[in-house]
Amino acid sequence: MQTISNFLVSEPSSAPAQVRPGKGKNFADHAVRVLRAGARSRIRLVDCLAAAGVALPAQDASEDNESILQALARSFISQQECSRLLNSIKEALNDECYGLCAHPCRRGTFAFAVEMALRSDTLTGAVDVFFRFYGVVTEDLYFEKVVVGDDVELRVSLNQPELDPDGILCDYWLVSLHLLLSWMAGYMFPVKRVDMTLDQASLNGCLSPFLRGECRTGQTQNALVFSRKYLTLPVIRTLAELQEHLALLALGVPQWPKSSPGWSSRVRAVLRQSLSQRLHWPSQDEVCRDLGVTSQTLRRHLRSEGAIYQALSDELRRDLAIEKLCLQRMPVAEVAAQLGYAEPRSFSRAFKQWTQMSPSTYQRRREKT
Image (cartoon, rainbow, N blue to C red; front, side, top):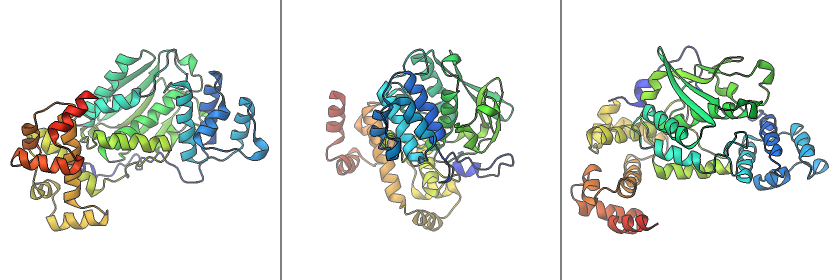
């Protein structure tokens, strides 16, 4: 079985990817690029600032869009403030593409695409589902996965690039794809290269160069390039975790995985893979065997992360039980068997502790809503 442990090798061509620069990085340039695009759609930037909880210095207070943009360009704003500002633009426009495409991409599109992708076993399947989803819902964005030797290129292009002369959307998607896939796998895997159609002089305010791989400008494609082996990483996240993650994104305080996978992520990966490949919920001894450690060593590693094996197992069981009952509409007895319960009654007792209702009652209520 492939686990995250199989990927802990050095990458000579790049350092571990980390989009978040240090505290000294000024995100104002990036915010100004996006806000200027929003201003072209005639939204009031003062309302967006208020919604994001971002206050300009008193001497720069204004309700005029251009004055606000000039003031922001002179200001320092944090990554969290920048993230909240971008969300406020999407809210004001009801468009996840910031008004930079011929047709709006309604709020919630991204979340639904990720929800579909999370049903995949590996990142390969997740990428394919995610790209197919956007291919169905919009003709303005085009995603493509291209394998080149030992590498894979995730390409992003626009049907009408003239609507986005600053390259905001492609820059946004190159970063977002890496963060999304890393979050799904619980491991911030390294990027080899970022290709951008923009020239070097136009990079001010772009975030893609901070992916730490080589950044090539003036290319014919916008592409995120990394070793294809990372596409075989297992998807370890659940729908419950997605909801929590989206809530943190809206607040501008998302929790991104580390550049080396923690033991909690490795345990979750083995549990999910065993269930998807063997239709079997493994014992702790089986998990230790797959990870190549003793149970005592695993307990010590998890304790250093503030985690307990049984709690990890129960949380994942709960989330998967809800998915199987409500999305896959599996019978209670079948869910109980797949999740390693000796009999449905044991599963029902555990489920009632998690949700304060029986599996069948929970299933009926979710179907009604």
